[in-house]
Length: 387
Image (cartoon, rainbow, N blue to C red; front, top):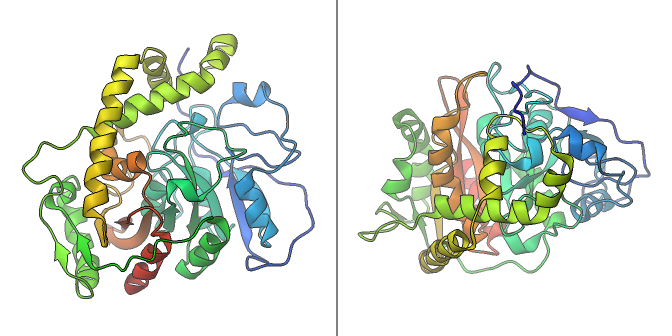
């Protein structure tokens, strides 16, 4: 699998969507950008890779999330670019380039919902439909100054979405406005909410220390605004016990599920992947069952701990460890600290809401609110304190 150099910036749009009748509903008149992992009837789904595009026919029906949003009145204004197979966190694609960040010109948006975030941030869409496996809604939300919700894993259908890792994938929404996010979430989510009252906040020092000092300092006023309404505990999340290796667990299970789902296609068509993605695919092809068992033990440990800690509490952490890197900057050193912040929500299936928190050197940085499964609505309510 040869790797390609990453080309320059691109517009966030893959292409237009043929006009279709609009439905009446709470999202009537809302312009919707759809990440090119979701099926849209009559159009091919490219998943960020030209070989995938060439080897798959046009979709015969909308993905479930697309159908729900358009059924509530949203109007699709285009499909948007994604990292290849969603297998990246940074919004760079070796085949199609990377969109410039409208909120931070000359910087990347983050990915893999990069085109969706750029379209919403530049104002050409109101509501963005993306996916979040390891942070691909939350990171571009934080870096583009947007609101971004990774819902509880069980509350959104993944039907009609090209999977990366079904155990962690979840459709999510991006907006410029919290009120619209609350409306869109009310349409998208299924199942009843968890109405356990929020009694406190957790802002653990060990997770905050994953962020650069300038980010921690910039986000402190937002944390203090929340702490003025609820008691806040800053003790390390894992206490004196060794932290579960959830980053390792995330990488192993993601690679295992990717290869189980797409390995035959990779072997048959030998697609060209770009830097980073190609390396992860090669590692995925060699994952062993023993590694998977070890990963699942780590995931179980994280789930047990978080079930205890998030009973009536919300975890409050930086969305990302640093502001958006400049175009062409090596993002490799950021991957581990990003997953240190995003990986807990991913491996447990927790709702996580990134809200615009502050700026560092004029670049947006986000604050992330994480709750127990089913507390999506409670997180959106709590975010009103930061408007």
